Image (cartoon, rainbow, N blue to C red):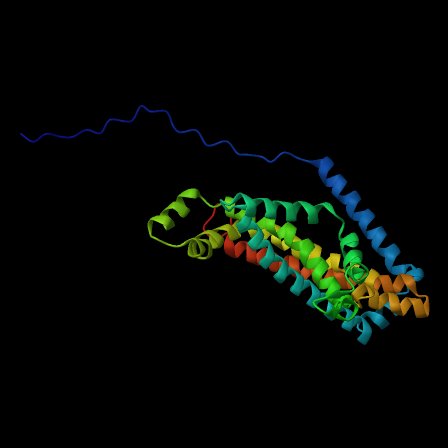
Length: 282
């Protein structure tokens, strides 16, 4: 006799539909956003229509030969100072992490001194170095150190102090187990630093280094006080002759804004490159 299977109806209650999530209405935030946009639009219209800004003069000098030469010197000075500053800063960071107490003290003292004195004071001291040391190794310091050389030396020594702390923080962010694993493989100190530590430390180094780069670009304007013909000084030479101060300052401002914006975009992509494989990387 064959058995017949009878399917009994399920007694489980039907599944309830999941609740629909409705976002909270934020009427106040939207109203504030509209007010801010209106105010920004009014400010922009005021700037554009204000004849005192002399936008025709801004357009005339924006790509003039003297301004572009000043811009070129500013970019060259920024790149050179950042490169030399991070080379010296990396050396100082390694010395600061050394087991030798003398090297640690020297590195700490350097960073302490150059972070404690204003960059303008440092530049003025270097500019007047001939008063303290008329000759160095038989060479007249007045002929040896011109305004551009003084700017490179002063800015590099200043930036190196900050770069040292940036690099040191990046090195300390590397997991200690990575260093111990490299030691177990028999890698020397410098190979561990260049092959293991620094590549991983770049994740922590790049963001503040990018901020330093932008800060250095703007900070180079201070060399105008020692007659280095950077972007700002080039515009100053023009408005001292034409008395068109506002439009020439706008020329310098717009160039600084344009270059820093490009550097900011580059910083974003470099950060994303070194953040690959980490949580939250975009």
